[in-house]
Length: 92
Image 1 (cartoon, rainbow, N blue to C red):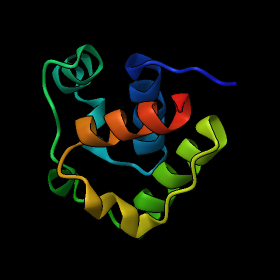
Image 2: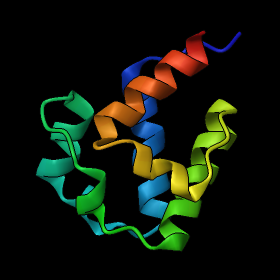
Image 3: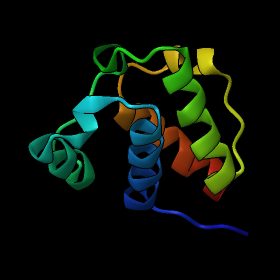
């Protein structure tokens, strides 16, 4: 059974956002705060297009085995909520 923690999931999400060319994750202060869990990022503020959503979905599925449709991201207000759900589902 795969066991992951929030930091690992945050890294997977950051990689998926980079692959989808979501620029905010490349800002040093944003990235450091996101990894530390001290600043949450609203999903709506990411302004992801369909390609970015697909890249993020693929990164999550490849790393964690959790399948998410591109529209599933709308269920979560923040990346922190997404992280929590992924940690819970992966460690269940």
